[in-house]
Length: 557
Image (tube, rainbow, N blue to C red):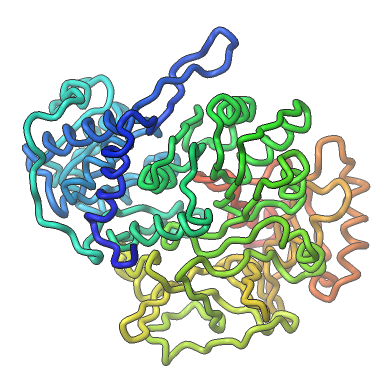
């Protein structure tokens, strides 16, 4: 599957329906059982196929078809997957966004896409009606749940049985738009990312290759897009109860219960889910014998968490740290055994965090740091591999069939985020990294969050990995106060429960004095609880911490 056409994605799904129609497609939490744990219901592949056919028919009858931009604001559920596959079948373009980013930001993003259809839960439609001027182009409205005081269709009233044959539209090519997904906006304004049918086909292939070309029997889903990929691979997807904007509040007992109950073989989760799960498994030893692999994403997983998961899981289980973004998923991966074989020690000495080798068919390079556009590859200054203090560190750029080549909005994001190289487009990740002699990528921090002092640049993750080893430290965050070029480096610190800040602070000073990268840091501030991103509840909000630190120190940001 290398050409990446629309029909290949649907054919993968329908092949499962033909060969195993009663196979469970989605298991989802529905209330509580007598033991207080979630009770589950399920949907088979045939039921999901028929339901999505019904949705496709009804949407087509209302004027939704190839290229129709359709806002989808629906919680993780079987309804969400039926809607997504229904849109895929008629070639419509789903527009998805994290509602947890806040009403004002979300509305600004949604208005920018000039959507023509709107499918959402009642709360989403209430906002649409309240701010109707921003949705004047919407002509088709579908409510998932109880319709309140607006007109339009109800998904519930459509039923789940198609009438007659499916509408036949123009077959999409690999370059046709499939999905518009928004970045979280955690380190800058949210951007609308264009993903094509070819991107989806490549993602499915990459996930399949990463798993040794063996489709999972059952997978636990905490990110909706991963569910779409796994359904195209024939997995039995399990949806534990979670709130998309509060993933970190997911009960680890519910996660462990779902894995045990349904024989989950693989799962994808952010550190916000994996860390509580590890703590739960330590306190309540559970075999989780079926679990063959854990894939992480959203933010770097602490090495101690990876080592801990290795200790509580089966000997043959894989713990894979993944790296990716809305624009390119996945970009690279590394398995725990390689990571724990000397690479963690290098990270603790200031090498950054090793995020592994590029994923299947992905190419990665590093270019000199600049905040200016790089319109063509001829204008890029590629850095040689290797780390020499901070001189070998630059911005990571990637290309590949899964990598988005264009933003839908804002237009200026294309100038700042893409590099044209003949027929190829390189995506500027905004992440700082270097590449070693074995083609492994070492992540050093976000470009926008770098601290530039009079003595030179300092990179967040590279510095923080040195300090995170100090006893009593939960995590750290480097911020810079003042004008870039003369910034004052400040280390914000979260201490572990029960740790004494009066003991931790001098230990941090003594440890930092041992390294060239960190000995200039003189300010250490203990923070009660770091702000984190919306989507994964794991990326530290250093911009917010910068303002907090400046206020504490009585200076300007």
